[in-house]
Image (cartoon, rainbow, N blue to C red; front, side):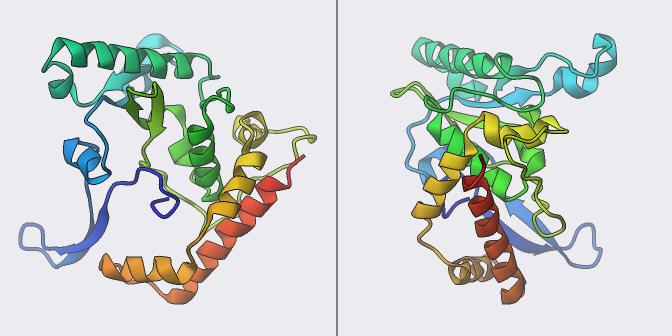
Length: 240
């Protein structure tokens, strides 16, 4: 996702000993904060995520399997630092809530001609079999105030590309799940074709980046994942 120029937190594998126990590898990943934005050459602005308060804590109170979801501002300290920042954050929250409310609970649905960046991000995540990260309640966004756009942030995708076949079905076929409908509803075929044309890196490049992050992985495994990702994009681009 980082090589595709999506906002992605820096991540490293770090050997850690907790409370005197044996050393184990831990994921060390930066949070979506001011420093994250600065590293990506972005002006400080509102960072949003979906509030899971009613999804988990108060789910029983709502007496429904599909509780209402709302956006939530993460960097409230920045928001409250000036009247103008409050105005920007309320505008950002309004845009995110509109995106959530026009969707059908499980996954975001949008006018992809107006949200081409989200469409491209979601297509790449779908091709990675990042089902978990596409759930509405697992989304994070940066708000670009100058262009009035929500920019997706890679977060908690839990990709299963290594362990299963990605659920990609023709648009003309009857879909069994809301997830398998996503590709057709949000225009993934066009976005997949565009992504394929933009890929200017190889599995070898990714392997070297992983080595630099202190991650022990076999080159053949990286090759397999990369090839499967490309194959999924090709399958998505051919959907009718």
